[in-house]
Length: 390
Image (tube, rainbow, N blue to C red; front, side, top):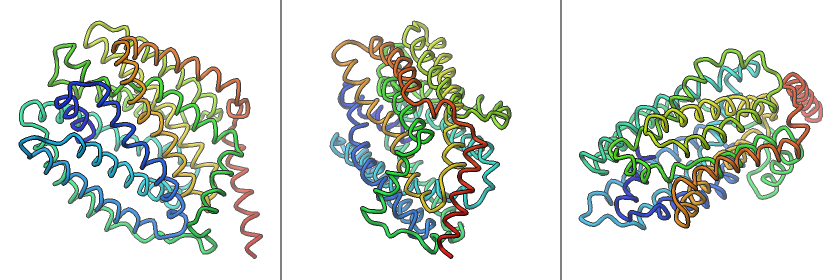
């Protein structure tokens, strides 16, 4: 709920798409730098400890939002600081969270893991925005923040129940050199580079969520702003429940590219929609393609990245899939400020398709990537590293 209540509260306080878009910049800067730090730490310390400390920090951040909302005149700067803190803590947390998965589940089941993990996310993203939109319209932002704060009791209990996951015995120390090693490894492989760039392109140009509060008002449905966020998750959930076919696909890079192009087309049609329900339909179609892309991107990451690089590359992965949406908020807000909301959305969808085609031509090894070869390469790298240790 907080995810959509903060931009709605910002729009209520400022009536500016630009200010809502700048929330993405406030999130991006700390996330970008701390994701590298979080990646290095995930490869060198107990990943469970990282989850515990960052979860406590995020609890405090929501408490700050609640206190600010209860003030007679909530401060705009507090919203910027709070989303920055939350994004920075997420940058520290996410690599450890992602690096846990391949230590628990066999690699051949990674497509199923991606789907199941998506279900967890999508159910929350369908229900919470709808509830959040209604709550902020009827009871105010403070009540939504209070509910979020109380739910941290469950997540804190959960991370305390996870067993310890110590780093590999020959783990690199968390320093600048280890970060550079992880970055060089990621940049040396087109199948990884393609997952980053394709998604950044799609989300930077084609994710207009900063405009959702203004769109809801324009459609005369301010209290239903959560439907715009939820529609994407509904489409993603459909993709997840029908994703069994993904296990028989081996050209993962090709399908990431096709899905990104589908996202751009759906967002373009969303921009042309003059009816609320038609707009929600095209957002759901966009969400479907986004999830297909996500399933295959996560499969590529989990099947190919060696364990000793897993935390650092999880940090890079986080940067790749959050850079687009966060900076995309600013992009869509700025374009809407100088033109209008409709032009901002349509131009973003068109540029997404053009950028996807350009990247496909630029990264031929990504398009031709075969998951079976990726598994064999990872097994070989792990074997060679084990022999070197001996």
